[in-house]
Image 1 (tube, rainbow, N blue to C red):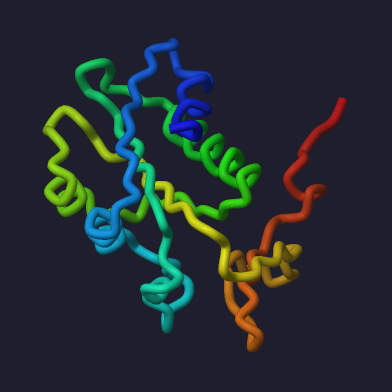
Image 2 (image 1 turned 90 degrees about the vertical axis):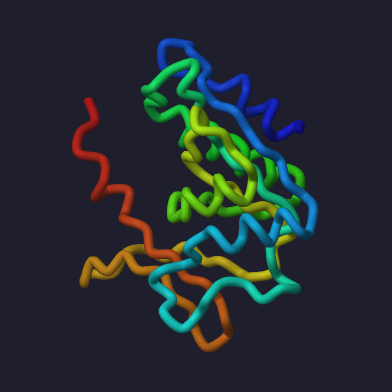
Length: 165
């Protein structure tokens, strides 16, 4: 609830505040959500975390079409805010846009006027993540090394700032 409360106070396009949330911590519903998510597409030989390493909770971010049909970037702002708040609490997380929306709506009994936008998975971190500078080949694909460290290439700061006056 505290993480959703952080998101509730975020900026919202035209201040319409069209987002709704489902908070899930129960094992059965967690499994129902887990089965709807596309995990780490660049890691072809990994189908997602094993049962013992799976998230302990999820926050499903929904757009409410009764309020607006344009959610702007509100769901991205909300998800990032939730993830930053989670880090302060010692949690790790990941946001998912690769979602089987039809199955998720069925599994959670979500009505027609609510549109799943993102799912945020939360739990105690079990893997080491390392941010790497993007190589000269420009490959943005994340990968795991022989020590199971998850490497995430990021563009160089000088490459993304195109002007400074």
